[in-house]
Amino acid sequence: MNKFTRLTACLALVVCFFAGAANGEPATCTAQPPPAPAAPSFSGAAPSDGYQIMYHSMWEFIRDQYYDPTRLKDWQTLEHAYDDKLGTIDDIQLALKYLAEATGDKWTNYITAKEMRDQAAIQKQGLVLGGLMLYRRGAHYQLDVIHYGSAAYGTALRERDSVICLNEVAIDALSREQVDILLRGHSGDTLLVTALSAVDGSQYEVSLTLAPVPTPVVEGRLLPGNIIYMRMPSFAGEAYISQFVDKFVELSAQAGGEVKGMVLDLRNNLGGELPAATKFSSLFLDESQIVTQSLVRGKPVNQIMGEKADQIVAKGKAIDADTVKVLRKLPLVVLANGSSASAAEITLGALKDNHRGIVFGVTSFGKGVGYKSRPGPIGGLMSLTALKYLTPAGNDVHEHGIDPDVSVLMPQDQTTDIQLDAAIARLNKELGHTHNKALGG
Image (cartoon, rainbow, N blue to C red; front, side, top):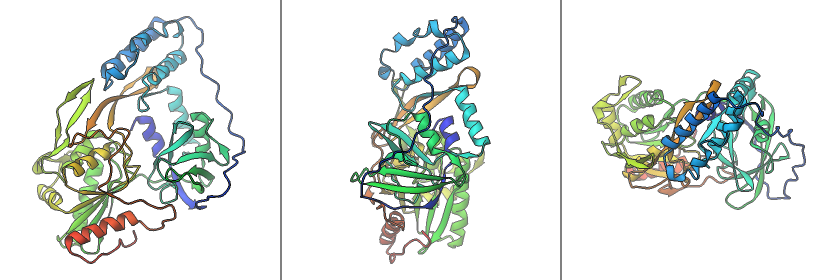
């Protein structure tokens, strides 16, 4: 996840009211959209050698660091494409934005200094950004991921559904900037989302109330039969690994040290850092393959293996080796959904392909790439897709995702967590217990 995405992802929605699925007349969506932003253009000022050097340096950065140079079509023609247009700082920022777009890669982007200032101003004004990440696919904006703790979480909204209206404004023909305006507002404002189901094409509406969402934290609880439920919310740093281990030790003590199994919840984990994901995977894998092959600059690089039990360190503190040994032997079921993305899919793939855990739920997001970033002129930031990985079994998850071992769909009208219930039932079956649903789940 790039810096700009992390900035916007920290704010989301809290549920107020679910209007329910509707199969009636199609929405008319007749409300007026926000004004379209003026199309950017170059200033026409005399070109500057300094700006040309800045542009060329970033052009080389993409050429040399992009994960697969063969995908950079006609890249040579862009080397001097804007030499006569780079007369102001706004000109160089615009040219770098066009350069990122020329890769044709949704994950490679340039965030201008102005866009960063605008985001800071939005937060300062107390505006709340919607917890729905939308991305244009074909004629519609598709709901890519749903933030945990947002209004979308736990409602009828599902990943891969198409959002067609926001507050009765048709959005198919709107720009990204106009859609972002509609997605944000002040805490307490209502956001009416009209969507089309990816399953059957039916139309439905969900009414949400905007509010900030707290910073994600590791969650866990002890279930009947001494099964531990653990939710890993993010891989944005090793602090989450430390939280996870500390919570597990606490719950293990509650169970008198007799933990029988674990449900690991990676749903709505949007990813984070590759090293954090590989280190976390090592908690469960006995020095097995975590990533079988990575592609960097068009060339395969060495596989990534799990760490030894007595050598795992998080936030500068060694993880107790005996705790790791317990984790590596526990029967494990893993929960995944369409918002399990990026670094979370590294862990999913490692656990599944090494037959370490049974994956329940639905197909994950499908981001099998990582990025590098480089500062641009006067505060901008270029985020570049710099590596692509394969799972231990050699599977390419990019744009596909990781399929579950056991598919468990969440119907739109479902009010209980049937995916968690199914995972617990599977563990109980393996352990010879009577089936118990999650208390408060």
